[in-house]
Image (cartoon, rainbow, N blue to C red; front, side, top):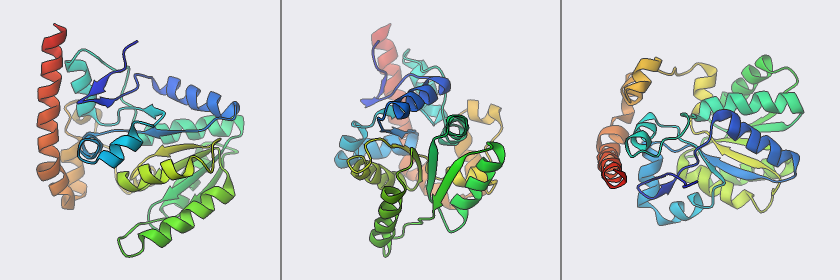
Length: 251
């Protein structure tokens, strides 16, 4: 079966159940891997940064987080079964981990964010083995923060690591740690801990289907206007044009 692409970015056409089964089966067989959840911002960085693109293409599982990407795939007649957000994947994998006894580590976020999220997950999934490590990167402290985080993850040897860091940092960190922890799965989840903790909320489903989640987020984080209107709009326009071109070719 042909792997779908979005402006040359590869995408895995899997369901949530399929993704969780693939990861769980791999862990049970002693194999690790990496997961990314692309949206418009990640697509922009994929296209603009060769180093990130190279690492991204070595990723084992790429599931579509952003609804505009889901719509674009439908438009170009290479649909994926469903949208899989980082938040939904965090909940689903934690449930599977609790059921079979895998350990998880929540890494990233401001002080307290990861621990609060772990508490929510433990309350939901009895027996979940979850550790945490806060890591909020800033230019002046990034190197030392990441060094401490690497040491914590390597010492813990978890089955799954949820990395709540900016895309550039999480991709590089995952790629670096794979050699040290070949049996561990690394899942990039961005700012998901805030959603698990209720610090931010997801929009209603009808807004998501209309690809207006960005507008909802701006009501909660108006400082992100540049990401959407300056950085994101050109990529969104290019995505639409590419999807229409692919649709015409397939027709």
